[in-house]
Image (cartoon, rainbow, N blue to C red):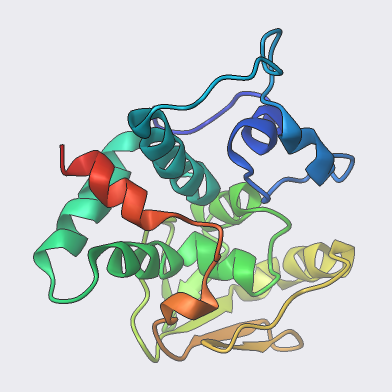
Length: 200
């Protein structure tokens, strides 16, 4: 699957994915999964829990199975905690950084903004959403695209600030200061289960 094109409310109900443009969804909807038999009570197997943990992270960052497996493989070869390195890599993606900075309502929109060549990294055009930023990289918006991005920013109620990013909303500039620490990332992610899933 290159990208998910199905109903976003199913992602919310089945996996708890929060990056959605449909603001009518509420956390109470995650009590049961979607579908006719969503309310059926049954104990999930270890495999089912591991699969759900993987799908939750994968669907949150909107990456394909092949991409996600590659991120895991690369992380497993590096020195450090594999799960943390994998999440840090996902956070370093250009589309995710745009979303974190409040330059897009959802990661899906951030991906589209990058694909449509509205973004510059260190002054050079980058139209690959999976482009991995390095410490010190500066992301800016093309001059003829600034009005569009400003209209997006104005439509967002609250843009959270993140310690590893320096965001200048007036100049439409993002500086990727550093790789985030694990404690700064989503505490609901269960990356250890992902490691167990791929270790079978």
